[in-house]
Every structure is written in C-alpha cells, then in structure tokens.
Amino acid sequence: MLKIILNIIWLVLAGWSLAIAYAVAGTALMITVIGFPFGVQAWKLAVFVLWPFGRVAVPVEERSEGWTMVGNVLWLIIAGWWIALLHGVVGLFLCATIIGIPLGIQSFKMAGLALWPFGRTIVDASTVDEGGASVFYLD
Image 1 (cartoon, rainbow, N blue to C red):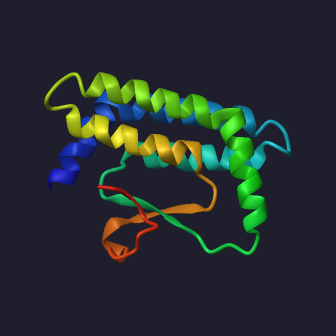
Image 2: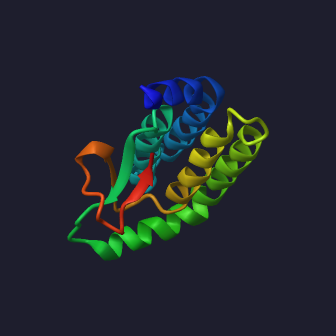
Image 3: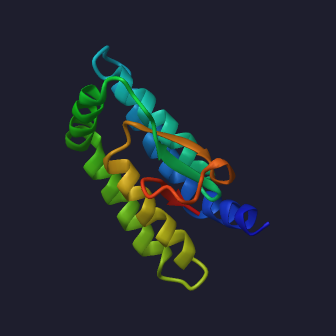
C-alpha cells in the first residue's frame, strides 16, 4: 500500500514531467535510423519513471555486450548527462520538504539509470532475488 501511495505522490509531483522529458527526447531521437534504438530506450524509461516504486532495473544477459557499451557511451554523450542532471534538480526540489525526501532519493537513484540505461530491463521487485549485487534497486 505504501508503494502505491508513494507512486501516486511521485506521479503528481515529478513523474509526469520527467516522463514528458523522456518522451520528447525519445521522439526526437526516433527521427533518424541511427537514433531509433536510443529513442526506444528513452520511451522505456519514460514508462518506468511514471510508476517507479516497487520496480527494479536488472542487467540483461546479452550476446552483444560491445554494442551495449557503445550504446551507453553514445547515450551518455547525447542525452544521458542532461537527463541525469534533470533527475538531480528534481531530486533537490523534492528533498526540500519532509514528505518529498523519499521521492527525492528515488530521483537520485534514477539519475544513475539515466546515465547508463542499455543492458538493463525493468522488472517487478518481487520477482528479483535480493542476493544479487548487480541489481539496481528502486524501492
């Protein structure tokens, strides 16, 4: 129940605006063939940022780890740094109030995902083994 309440507060205070930022970036990136995979990634993050509590980003076993690294480096240069900066600013504003502190912490956690998103997938937190050190928890 607490996760639902936090998600609703998150959606009202920050989720919708961050999702719009991801969606606009994703749409702009999808204009070209080269930018299409980056646009798809931005749209995945837009959906995730709407309702983040109770879901986690976990590493995906991929056959083309080299391409994942190249994608992450290009993402970092093209869009990742400014989206992570946006998460940081939103996190600071949310931490200005007592009720916003957990939401601000959530935004800071998502900044890391915004910097390096390729090679991860979003799953429900209840389906993940909590012993995994490589899991990026977004409680």
